[in-house]
Length: 290
Image (cartoon, rainbow, N blue to C red; front, side, top):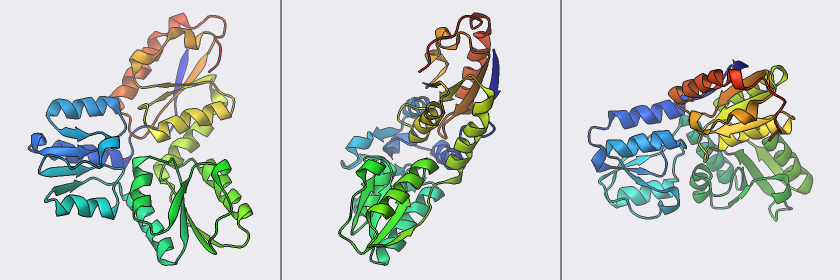
């Protein structure tokens, strides 16, 4: 079984910078990570072993117990930042610059008196941080969620990891449902997300199936798997080599390999090696697709 890598996969610079900031922390025991630094279970276990405190993303409303708080790559609202600072917490800010771009764009649209629509996943920490600072705004996760809004001026931004195809379809649906409104769209999808999705599209004609490596909570990893399936190619989302099952690959001659932006290089390497070891077991009748 041949394994072909996507030509863009794995860590983006924002995740690398966040992990580098964690590595520089001299006293992890004095630092609470405000949510998940990245959506990668192996990384989170490593940080816990080093002694960092952590707050589950659903518990971020509680005040961290340590004097230092690390803001994750997904960012927080200005309101949340002020809350932490007013409580005397020192902040170690690892917000990705491309997430900051989304915050700035949303604020520009709000300053123009627009009701801001965020194309993204409701409840996601990045989306929550953007939404909390808006005087008028809401989250739209699909075409079905679009409605006619009682506002003459609308603004649209995207969660940084939004699939471009979803952004385009929701944008079009908003415009179709609101012909009365003055609508301004600022494209805030990050380039690493585009690069990884474009790389998968280029990969698909050459493979029988794709293994997508990344955390179960990683939005961009799930979207890579969905992109494959939507185009008729079986995709297997795994967090590590241990998740691979030989039966998945029976009859497949060529398998693609890609990974989300929070996936460790070491994890990608281990999955690749495990796939190579499966080679002898895969020359069997084709297995069911997923």
